[in-house]
Length: 120
Image 1 (tube, rainbow, N blue to C red):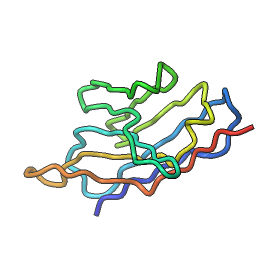
Image 2 (image 1 turned 135 degrees about the horizontal axis):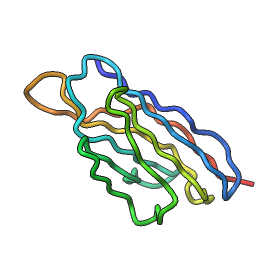
Image 3 (image 1 turned 90 degrees about the vertical axis):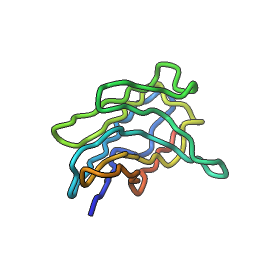
Image 4 (image 1 turned 45 degrees about the vertical axis):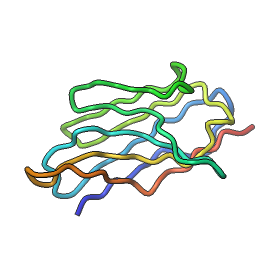
């Protein structure tokens, strides 16, 4: 069984920073891509950032240089450094990993989410 566990969320003032972590565990053969999504109350889940196993990175437009995604392949861990946080960044942040447990097909797995609240 594969598990993704996020951590690092919490309450932060506007302009503050948080670092989210996502650890993938279980019978993992390889991780193709890791991504961070978020879902604010009443809104659909949206992509924040994604990184491939080759290091290619994509950010949503609203990131505007404030967030940095990274990963440690040896540890099956992904990170999202969030700086200059705004109240509109308030959401539950979910980790996603597209990975293989055998040599056949890759599947998407999701973490349980970590809540980020940006408020004064």
